[in-house]
Length: 272
Image 1: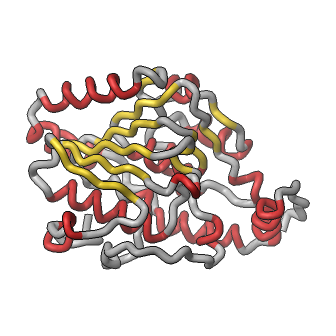
Image 2 (image 1 turned 45 degrees about the vertical axis):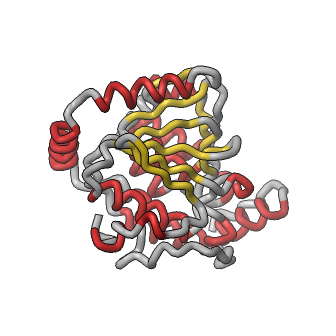
């Protein structure tokens, strides 16, 4: 939580978010991914906006919990591949540049307030940073979970590290190297999802959880989550993992995978 100062985030109500909707009410900061036309893919400035909003939640005493949700039928499709290739979409965000590089795998670290993910759309690739980073994940029973990176000549390095915090290692590695869609019921069984519910009931389920949390001491929860962070194993080296992704992109297979994805054809791997 050192990418933005407390003074910077105190001005949140005067800022314009290009990729998020941020609203605060009754001790809940609701953060909604608002890039449905691009499947809520993670644009670099969108990641900055997330870091800014989460830092505000960390410092603001009136915020007791964070609800993460998304517009559209895809909760998050992962990294914006066009942005990874240098094609950055212009935007009118007023969120200032952070003091350093934002590594999305670390956005949830040291937040020390309950975070709830309300998953009403499919999740792919880097979208799992949200599910692995949140304390409680409620998902609709009709959503899809996929890690397709290896089919595009890439590998979910940072996602793997995030998933290892909440799922068994063998299952995580199997999922990463095979690249299949994981049924949501299986995701619940392996600890990635807290509760599976129907489309009709998900709003009521999430509201019930937030009501339950509000009945508990926010100070006790904050200190408890601070202690939880303290006793966790050393944080994954997300900078190293990010660099490994860049190295993978530059391989012949990485370039071929991205090209094949753009051209909507099977990739022709060379193993280099």
